[in-house]
Length: 154
Image (cartoon, rainbow, N blue to C red; front, side, top):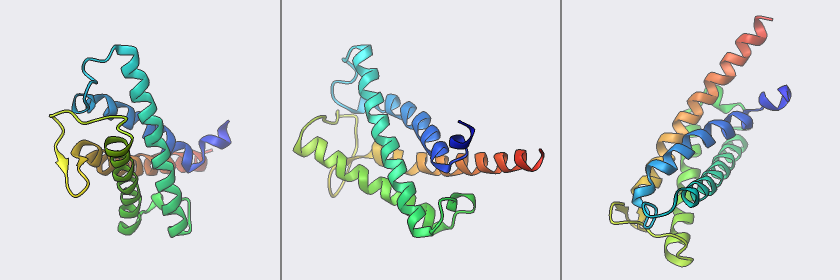
């Protein structure tokens, strides 16, 4: 198991899951029906959304890694790498939010959700994909630095 925990993807998964899970609950009032939903159904829905967010984060990580030609780009990220990581997440979010709110109508926004043109994407999911990826990059970087320091101290 120790080998798996040293992979950068492991940190991206763990930090993304923890941060997105909390965000999903905080933004629940901005989605129609979430306030009235029973507790267990709300947990299942937020968990499902969180797993999707983790998938977006891994996709963004791998695209950025391919462009940077390194899975360790986060150790000293250049501005374009961070922007690409965030940009991929935002693009996926806009596409999926549009699909689920306008085409499949799997969910709708409540009156509390400000909408951002041109696709009418909710402000909360857009902010989610700015703030959380920045935190994930920082936390993953700190994790890698700490792990290297521990290895050097052996």
